[in-house]
Length: 171
Image (cartoon, rainbow, N blue to C red):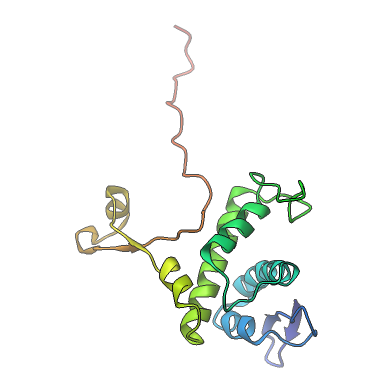
């Protein structure tokens, strides 16, 4: 990942290709649609993912949903890989894994749509689901919501409900 300072004061981040050190054109096209903060975060996650692809002999054109699920499992504490060690030296928390899953879903949806490759992966990532009551409550016009995007990639644990509040008095 490389920082690029522009003449007008903007900063952007560029992902370099693992094999030859040139700009990774697919990642560059994807990152160009985001602001500086999101570019930095997504570039960081993409660099790690692209290194994993190269280390395992995969190509972006033929990666499957199972490959992405295995990669996300290797980034977390739940799976230690074939050699008994995780892919990353430090394990990621739930929110970091959720950001990584969002980044990968967005990247592969953009890639498969823009380059018209890997239609099977695009179909697997384009799942839709019906809204539940919580979604309708959050929406101002909840009665108009007919479907929502759903990601097959894990987004961390569901939010826990807070324990009941006690008054602090002993019984």
